[in-house]
Image (spheres, rainbow, N blue to C red):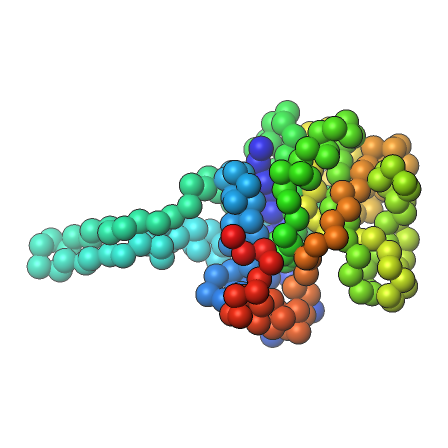
Length: 256
């Protein structure tokens, strides 16, 4: 199953770093947050990724173009025809497709643009700025058993996020503004989607979290996988510093 990662936004709330690089390339420890997300999926056996790039997407392409070199010991022999030898390569078993989905394209439009790389298959999708210890294998099983078009991982953070209206059967009926500390469930990404989700997306101007997901909810086609473990998005420098501290202190819940 392929994993789609939205990595094209501007990251305006963390502009201290995003003016230099795309938000998913901001580092936690010595690796971009994008790498941390991919490592989490890879730990569950999902190694094929489609990255939806936009703002400064060339930096994401350059990172993976050089990734093999970053992860290996090397010998450069300038006395023998300028040769290069790779030692102890330790790269992950990844297949990574990076797609330029447009500079100002909305989230739905970015997903629509990678449809040809998905085909008629169930796929996963998440945002390039959120880390979690969500058990991906259980998430996929939950989605498959529901038989619905889409499943969102739902978490209960503090304020500033839009709340999900979830009933006792984990079906999502709608979306609402979330009041601070009201205990509501919010969209944490880490979604599983059927290919018919593309039919809900009109064009580049479509915000995926609006009409497509709201229509799915209205039709009873949207489920919530409730995750009570760790989740943290990286919206601000304060968020970045929190994730950095967890990583450096070896307390990162998402680390495998």
